[in-house]
Length: 120
Image (cartoon, rainbow, N blue to C red; front, side, top):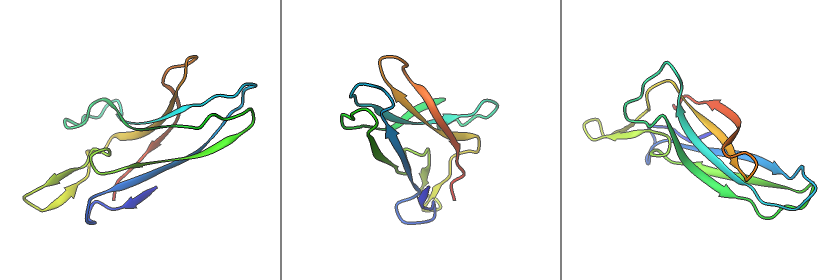
């Protein structure tokens, strides 16, 4: 969810929240990764095609246990930039999304979810 708009002091901020649950039979931890990605058919010259913007490792979770994870992204992590002429933060070009992925030994960069986000 967007917690600050482009027009607010400090620029846009987004809060990504999710719950990680250990569905396996052994204890383990997980690294949740947040990427921004330019969608095919769009171009955004100031954004890389896919960029890691935030990550967090969970605690070691026993079988069936879960943990709430929150990762905050600021203006630079969202691809916004500050325009000194207008003294304001500018939105990234349309055609990008936020992807939530995990990294583990079995499946590197397994994409769990994608959210198309329009910054206000």
